[in-house]
Length: 284
Image: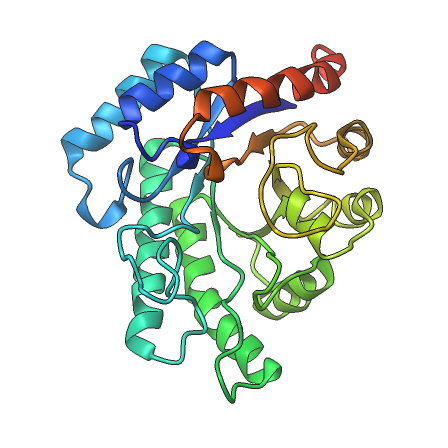
């Protein structure tokens, strides 16, 4: 397993500077934010894509993932950093999310990254039944999964508290209906803790579908607010042990977007906690 850091904590920095800082702290990889100011796909010029490649080559970092969950560029007044959703009542708003995801999948392939992570369907709209929302989500996902397959990358859904898919069981319901080899699960450990999942059990049960992990800590209250690993209630030794027990050898990406005022400090403290837990697997 290798540890990466998400660039979504570095919204106050250029991508070039972000890559340099993450590499200097000692991470193996970087999760690229497909959003402003780093890589908003709708407005990304070829020279900017090459700049991203050059920065990654210069720092020796590898891509762990492309994060297309967040959409600060849209600045939707309902929720400025990730709306609109796949199940938005307004079809034009839904199309914004669909188009962004399609562009992010294409960008992922162009840059040689393995997959993108995206939102699990927004909260239910007024008067919308859960079944209608699930059906709409499946309808939207099928052509995106086909596009991912054509691009040779994966589309990973990330369950989140308060949204349509909160748990691994709910993810499975949708994945079974989409039935596409390019669809997978991004297992966010903090999110799973928030909704009360038995994390080791869920990791073991979902091992074949989990293609990437997000790591952050959460307070004992289970309120959804990302904390630096080691400062909340999650037992990361147990979590990493459970992941290792499945034979997973991919990326663990630390996601600490609330720490934009001191991303270096948060990244450094997280690595101090996680590196000793992951290190025994190196060379195994």
